[in-house]
Amino acid sequence: MRIAHFSDLHLLSLRDVPLRRFLNKRATGYANLRLKRGSIHRSSYVRAIAREVKRIGVDHVVVTGDLTNLALEPEFELAREVLEEDLGFHPRDVTLVPGNHDVYTRGSRTKQRFATYFADYLLSDLPELAVDVGTGLFPVVKLRGPVAVIGLCSAVPRLPFVAAGRLGSAQLRALDRVLAHPEVARRTPFVAIHHPPHNPHSKLKSMLEGLSDAAMLWTSMGSLPSLVVLHGHLHKRVRREDQNGGGKSVTLGATSASLHHDSGEKMAGFNVYDVDGAGSLGALEAHVLGEGGRFSVRPLALS
Image (cartoon, rainbow, N blue to C red):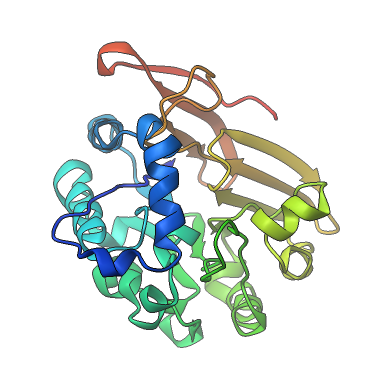
């Protein structure tokens, strides 16, 4: 089995958006776009990555959030277009989770914009175990061969300049029930979440950018004999391996699919993970976008 993983598309579209809708957190977000982000994030890269994932042929695709920039309807429409036309996988073969930019304002969460636009991608094989987290029903579970892909929502609206995430106690209790389910217990869990499960060492950075209940997440996952966590948010490639109480956990981060950067660990691309019939990881590849739209393939190195 082969799993492709990309993240942080940051697709921008302001088509027919009135000025009054920027009289909130979007004002600072839009300023950041013009001063910095807009010059380094390119939607053409996202389309190239989606088409390349389709070309190489994989069994499942995981997208770990921040499909949009400002959680505006035209951006969700653009993201949906990329998924349908460039990626072209059936929704059952794609796991999506929201990032903080997909729930950028309280209004985008209240109206459940992410869940509305991607409803068919969020259908779970274990819907009875999902809970309403405000952004939709999570966890989303997709049972695929030797793996159980478990999508979590860590995205919540925050004040300007704050990008931290939270799962919440209800979702964490639901995750416990999912992990105990016999169809999940006999598979290797691949947990998909936007925010990394390991917080920065700096308390300030953790408060501004981290996952507030990361410790509680590890309480749920720490006794598993085998575990893979897929995330985004950092805009760089990550491979981390840890021993926990139950066995071994592997954390794999994808860079931003739209990011233009001189560093090979940050330049736009996607990851591919090989999984054997027993659910164990094999080759871990970074597919890095280069000149002329060509991709180079290299092993995903330990961070």
